[in-house]
Image (cartoon, rainbow, N blue to C red):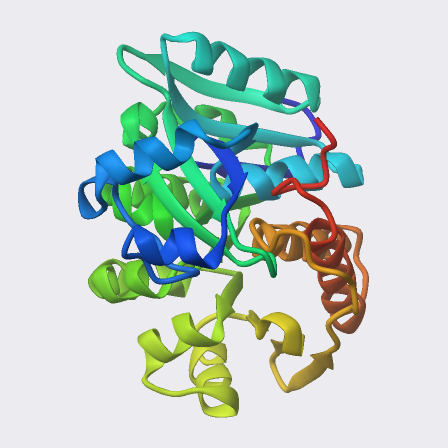
Length: 310
C-alpha cells in the first residue's frame, strides 16, 4: 500500500436507482428526501412499484462514493468495508477493482447491502437501505499505515460505532489525517455521545445545515463557529445555496454551480471528494471549496451517484 492518498471505511452498499413521481412517493407514505428502513414502509406497495421500474445498479455507500470520485479525479485510494458472498458482492468487488482502488473489503457470509434510491422529477432522492452484511465493519486496519488521509461518515458510526471509532483512532495513531462526513441529521441525533469522542480527532469535517443544527443547536455562522472550535477545517454545505468553508480565522463563501439537476444523490460525497483532492494537492482553502462545489455539480448533472459512467 505505497503512496495511498486517501482511504475510506464504508458500508458497502449497492445503490439501486430508479425514477419515481411525487404521487408514487406519497403513495408509499414517505417524505421526499428522507431515509427509511424496509420495515418502515409498505413492502407490498414498494414491491409492486419496483417491478414496474427500470433500475440502475451502482457501487455505493457514502464514503465509497467519495473514494470512487477521488480515484477518478486522480488520487491513489483504498477502501475498507464488507460485502456478502453473493453475486452482488462479486460485482461490487469488480467495480472497486475497475476504479483502481486498493480494496480491503472483507467477504462475509450473507447478503451484500443495498440501498434503493428513489429519484423524484426535480432530482431529489429518497433512500431505503437494506444493510445486509455491510454493517459488519470489524476489520483489520493494518493497511491504514501508509495512508495520508482516512475518511468515513456518520452512517458507519451508526451501523458499527466500535469499529468506526477503532479505525479513526488507528488512523490518528499512525499519523494520518481524518475527514468525517456527518452524513445525516438523524445519525447525528442518534450518535451524539460517539461524536463527542471522535470530533476532536477530525481534521476536516463535512456537514450540512441540518446536521450542524442537530449537533450544535444553531444554524449559520454560530453553528460554524461552534464546530470550528473542535475541528481545524469545517465545510458547511448548503445545497443549492453553496457552502461555507472555514479554517481557523479564514472563511470563504462558495457558490453552487448552476446545473440542471438530474439526481442529487451523492452530491455531498462528491463535494467531499473534490475538496479532499484539492486539499491533498495543497490548494488554498477557497480553491478546495470551489473544487468541491464543482465536483458536486458534475454529479448533480448525471444520473449516477458518482462521476463514473458505469
